[in-house]
Image (cartoon, rainbow, N blue to C red; front, side):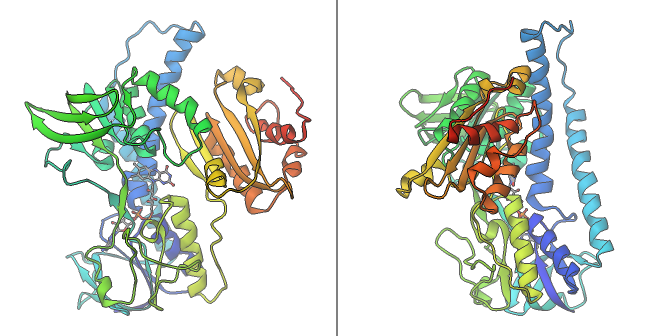
Length: 470
Ligand code: FAD
C-alpha cells in the first residue's frame, strides 16, 4: 500500500498534522498503535487529569464555602470512586469518538498498527487489526513522525509493583490510597497530588531541586508552594533524594536523603513523576537518516524537517516543551511544508500552564531566562489583592506580571499565578506573538470586574498610571 503522507502516531501532534494535511488536499494515513486516536493527551494526560482536577477543585471550593462564607451542608463528604472514574472515562470517550468522526469526514485513513521504519520510504506494520493492508507495510512520499513520549521510570523505582505508579497508573484511579508519596514536584506530580489530596489521600511530595516547578519564576511558584504545603500538611520535602523503593507488607517503603527528611517511611502508593522520555526506541530509525540527540529527541529544524529529507518530526518526540499545543502547532507547520507552503515555527510564545490551585501560567520570556541570559527587562507586576474580582472570589494570592523590553516597550513575556491563569495567558501569548507594546494592553478596554483586567493593570503599572477600580 502507498500513501503520499503517513503520520506515525495519532496524538495531538499526529492527528492535527493529518487533518491539516488532508485540508491541504493531500492523501493521508495515520498509523496508530492504539485502538483510539488521541495519544497521551487525550487518553492518559491533559484531559483525564483536568477532569479529575475539576472534582478536586469543586471539593475545595465547597469546603471554602463552609469555612469562609458560613454556608453549611450538614453532610459528610462521600466519594464514589467508581463514578468518578467512569465520568472521567466518559469524557475521554466523548473526545476520542469525535476524533474518529473527524478523521472519517476528512477522508483520513487510520491503520491500527505499531509501525517501524524499514527504510526512508517504508514503514512495517505490526499487529492483526483488519485495517492493516496486505503485506503489512506502507510506503510514503513523506512521513510525519509523531510517536510522542512515555513516563520515565528510573530502574531503581521500577520494582514491578502496581503500588508504584507512573502518571498513567495514577490517572487510572484504582482507589484512593490513605497515603501517597509523589516523587517529583513538577507539574504532573503536583496536578496528580492535588487530585489525590482532594479525594482524601494524605499526600507527601518529595523534590530533588530546591523548589517546586523548576523552570517557572519563583514569585509565581510562591503562592502555589504555600497551597501545596497546606494541602500536604507540611509534607513537602525539597532538596531531597529518594534512595531505595521496596514493597514491604502491602506498602511501599521509601528511603529519603534530605536536610529535613532522612530515613525511611511507608506509603500505600507512590507516584513517580520525574519526567518523560521521547519514543524513539524500536522505531527502526537506524534504517533512515533521522538523527537523535543525546537526550533521545529527534533533531529537526524550524520547518520540522529531520536529517532525512522524507521524514518530519513533531510533538514530544521532537523536543521540549512537551506540551500538546506545541505538538499541534508543529503538526500544522509540517503539514503546510509538505503541502509546499513556506511555514516555519517561531517558538517565541508557547504558553505553559500548571493546572493546580492556584494555576501558574507563563508565555514568552521568563524572568529566570532574562537573568540567565543577562537580558535587561522591565517587570510590571500587579497583585491580585488589588483586583475587585479576585477579592470577590477570595483568590487574592494571585499575581500578574509583564516582562517588557525597556527600549521598545514591547512585551517579551508574561507570567500569571492565580485561579484561571491558564485561560488568561492566551491574551498574553497573542500580545507577545503580535509584538504588542505594553501600552497596547494598558489602553485596551477590559471588562470589569474580571481577572483579565489584571493584565491591563500590570501594563498601567509600567507607566505608573494604574487606576484602582474596585
Ligand atoms: P502523544 O500524545 O504521546 O501521542 C503519540 C502517539 O503515538 C500515541 O498515541 C502512541 O500510541 C503512538 N505511537 C507511539 N509509537 C508508535 C508506533 N511505533 N506505531 C504507532 N503508533 C505509535 N500537555 C499540555 O499541553 N497540557 C496539559 O495540561 C498536559 N497535561 C498532561 C498531563 C499528564 C498526566 C501527562 C502525562 C501529559 C500532559 N501533557 C499536557 C503533555 C501532553 O500529553 C503531550 O505533550 C502530548 O500528548 C504530546 O503529543 P504528541 O502527539 O507528540 O504525542
